[in-house]
Image (cartoon, rainbow, N blue to C red; front, side, top):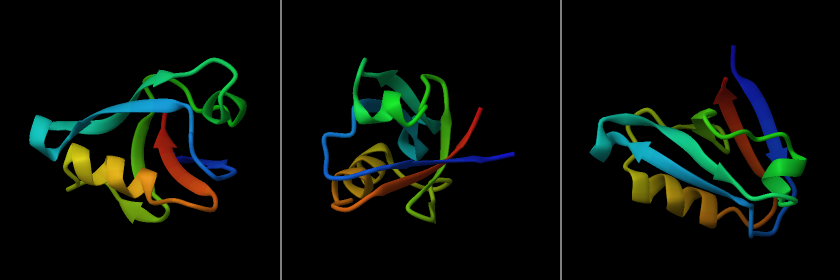
Length: 82
């Protein structure tokens, strides 16, 4: 069951991702910076990001997911599976 994590903007968000369609793996949180917005919002390493601001990541390339995250100027809403 997906969990929604909402982070207040603007960037930096305080996390890194790996995976994507180009890697044959789901978009996954690879690192969460200590004391960053992601840590405060309870984003965790290993969380699989299934949607970014309501848009499915199922077919996203890594760079597309990165750009969606970077383009979030207000809040960033992530649907994750743990």
